Length: 477
Image (cartoon, rainbow, N blue to C red):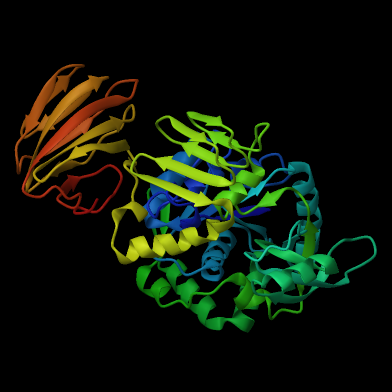
């Protein structure tokens, strides 16, 4: 069985932590591992599991590669979407890849999982996987229906029909239904045959492609073209842009599962959450005696039922109840627990106002390390830059700014013009406007420098790359 992990979401309801350039699946929200890493880790002890196929967008490719490498995922395939086209085309591309890599007489089973879910009962999850795998090998298209614990209006539902047999919990799918209102959700909860739609699937690769050919041939055709013209690029497989862009955007549910007669749902009660809101993180988090979830440097007095998270400084809360406060270096969210779904409306407003806070963090990750803005005015800005051991920035130049670097930790190898030299702690150098330059870390510990930029334009797009070990574009962030 081959996991296909879908890592293309933006997680806007978890703003200000989750943002376009660093969405929730790459954050350690519940442990020291990111949600992507947790998704991979919960499969490693399942018998017969193969290396995963991860589908993500180009902007997140280095997150995926670095986190899987850090977590010792041996040989993942990373397929890059040039733009998001929902789950049906993404899984089609993964199916083409898997079938190309396997023998002609083998039809591998694909386990399709979003990268940003939580499952607490791993043993229960594995038991459900074993049942689903057997059904998939018999030609069924299987999904998991989460046994509901509340009349949730934020999820779609699956209605189960007749059982396949008396020895199994698996049921024929009666129908998929959209997110209900409160009264309808309460009726679903009481009926016992409605389940939350998990977005997780198991089926044979060829059976899925056959179903696409029957029910959504335009998706199959465009996905095949994008795959056949894909380009292998170091650690990545880049789908061909024009064909994939022409592909209809649709989910597996709409494209296949609502139409097939072979659809099966298996009830799953394993501590599942899609972590779709801050209240979901409160529900599954470790709580103190007053039902507070406290993350970071947080103090409380007479606080109850709160989720309080601080990434970098002291957060104090006094005399509050059912309040969620999320403090990041450049944005603070304060919201009542009952209003968490309104975060998406707030993000839409920020987008309409073209605020950068919805796109990037004050701490910006790059394949070589990260940087964080410290101060900025009209003609200067100050950054703290951290370069991983052995890593290197591109050989580059800027047309509108000069830079002054001060090493505060580690050792730097600097190329400036036709000179290359070493800087140690407390040493500095100056990079004039228009000068070719490169920063490298030849050492065994992270290199940290303070960079002072000055000039008429300080945007991240003022960069011309002449050489880059990560294959990034010549002019881009």
